[in-house]
Image (cartoon, rainbow, N blue to C red):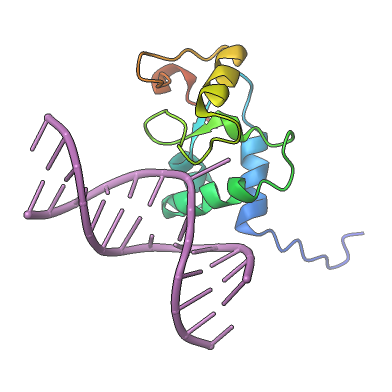
Length: 110
DNA sequence: TTAATGACCTATC
DNA sequence: CGATAGGCCATTA
């Protein structure tokens, strides 16, 4: 086992690993995930990775929000309001601008 | 191989 | 202060 495997971990696969580790009741930003990947500029690729979303239901893409703490418009896999509702159901609070309190709900990977 | 796209972020006018 | 344009990196066709 592990003789000389080649994981070939693509940036996408790595994004799924990180997003999948997001605890319930917290949210992470694309930029933050990009930093965890090693490049803060991969923010766009992060969104792309979730866009393909190879395993919906396994990857809590609804816990990923932009730098403003709000969900993206293109997210709308069934209604932006729907996604916000999911986060609310997890214990995340939203203000009058559909924004999450990043100071309290932003996931911090130590 | 080149070209185009993209669920972002930042900077500038 | 608000709006607009560009840049960055990776993936796909």
